Each structure stands twice: as C-alpha cells, then as structure tokens.
Length: 255
Ligand SMILES: Nc1ncnc2c1ncn2[C@@H]1O[C@H](COP(=O)(O)OP(=O)(O)O)[C@@H](O)[C@H]1O
Ligand SMILES: [Mg+2]
Image (tube, rainbow, N blue to C red; front, side, top):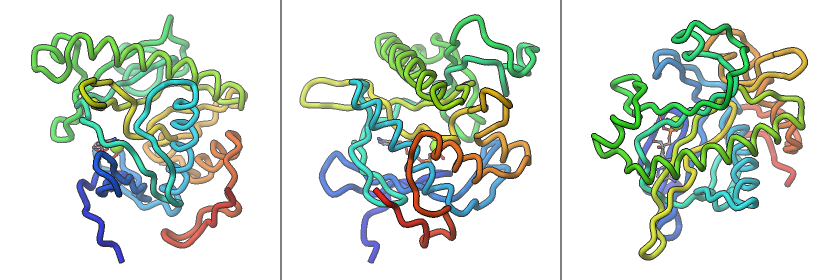
C-alpha cells in the first residue's frame, strides 16, 4: 500500500515525497525523544496530537500573512508541506527563563526575561546542537546576514502571535524552537517557517498553576505527557472525538 518514496526519517517525523514536485508529506510519529535521542519512548497518540496542534498553529500563521511550509492536513498523522531548503539552525525564542538558559546564566526558572531573547543553535545531532552566534553562522555560510535578519523578524512575529494566542487560553509561552527554510518561487527566494510547532518544541505553562503542558513532562519523568498535550489541544479548541489510542487506530477526527 505504502509506495511513497521515503526521503528522510528523523526523531519525530518521516518525510515522504509529495504528490506534486516541490511538496512533501510530513508523517508525525509517536516517538518521544529527549537529550538528543538518549531518552526514547513511544507515546501512543502523540503524533496525532502534534499533527493537529502544528496544523492549527501553522494555518493561523498563514492566515495572518506569516509564510509557512504548511499546505493542508491529509489525515490524522500527515500533512502536505512545501519542500524547502532547511537552514541548519534551531532558532530558540525565549520569554521566560527555563531549561538551558536558566542553567547557563544562573537564573531561577520562571523568571520573566527583560525582553524576548533569540538564540541560535547549529542543527547537528552529532554535536548536540551547540549554541552559535551570528558570527559563526555567517562565517561558515549557514545563513547570510540578510537571512539572519529575516529569521529574526519571522521569529519575533511568530512569538508575538503565539504569546497572545496561548495567553487567551490560560497558557504562558515560556520558550519555543523553530526551523526556517529557503523557499524558491520562480526567481525569488523567501525564508519561511518550516518543521513544526507543537508541545514537543515549546515550553507551555498553565498561567494559574504553572503546570507544565509540554515535553518537559517527558524530559523530567513527570508522567502525564499525553494528557498535557491533549489539554493544549482542547484549550485551543481542536476537536478530537476520542482520546488518541493505539498507533494507527484511533482517534477518528471529527472535522
Ligand atoms: N518543509 C520542509 N522541507 C524540507 N525539510 C523539512 C521541512 N520541514 C521540516 N524539515 C526537516 O524534516 C525533518 C523532520 O523530522 P524530525 O523527526 O523532526 O527530525 P529531527 O530528528 O531532525 O528533529 C527535520 O530534519 C527538518 O529539518
Ligand atoms: Mg525535529
């Protein structure tokens, strides 16, 4: 049945060749990984939730004129996307101190940062995605100064939108990671948002209780990861008619 050409299998997704040139199909797996794959588990239903949450966010961004690779969702686990040339950077946008910045700078987790801070990491699993500066990025040719400006402008717009969107449903957007790609339309090249935005790539805290609703539940062995992702989907108004069950089977989507 599955005769599509597999282009790439990563930690959380598989990319297949799309139906038309310049398109790909992203398949969201149930694999949960942390610390660059040192910790790995299958969480039944996670892929379905991330596919839906990422679809929701990317289609809203498309609607407000922020260009993304998202074309449309195909089924529970798959979406059709525009193929782009991924810029090998993980772009982290931080609003509140947590995780590595808290450790590095000796900040208490939960401290509001003086302003949103953008960090770049070189996307290279073998090296554990080391943090790099704009100097490294331009010296090694990973992105041009103009592209760095475009990435930062994109990151700030996305952050502003997402902060408001999550705040409206009682969630604090502590930080998140994006990947950007070069997308060619005829002669013009544009930097667009690629990959995914989901509780795998964000820190999301309940505004009232500070409960974590993101992948830190897995990284820190807190349990309740799937329930937390379900809570995020529910608050965003994403309707699923049953809790995700075993991979491949449930849930049946209502929309
Ligand atoms: N629109 C796109 N075009 C080409 N590659 C993409 C696009 N969106 C995401 N990717 C790449 O596809 C892969 C997604 O799989 P994932 O499991 O998340 O990988 P990883 O293990 O690198 O995090 C990543 O390497 C990501 O950079
Ligand atoms: Mg990834």
